[in-house]
Length: 71
Image (cartoon, rainbow, N blue to C red; front, side):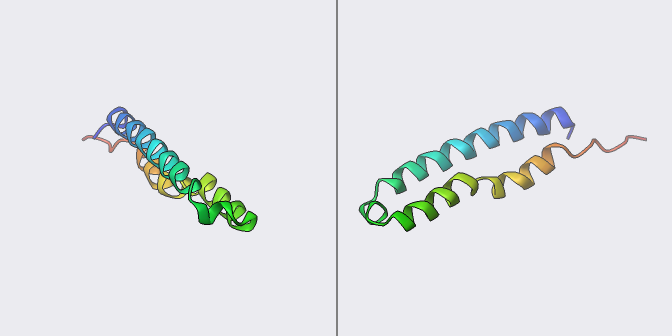
C-alpha cells in the first residue's frame, strides 16, 4: 500500500476516533456520579483529554511508515 493511501485511511480513522472519543466523553461527563466529586472530575478530564492519544499513536506510526522499495 502506498503512503498516500495509508495517510488517507489514517486521516479518516483519526477523525472517526476523535469524534467517537469526544461524544463518549461528553456522554460520560453528564453522569451524576461524576458531577458529585471534584476529584473524579479532574481525573476524568485528564483521562478524557489525553486518552485518545494512546490509540492514535500506532495509527500515526502506520501512516508515516515509508513505502517498500520495488525491485
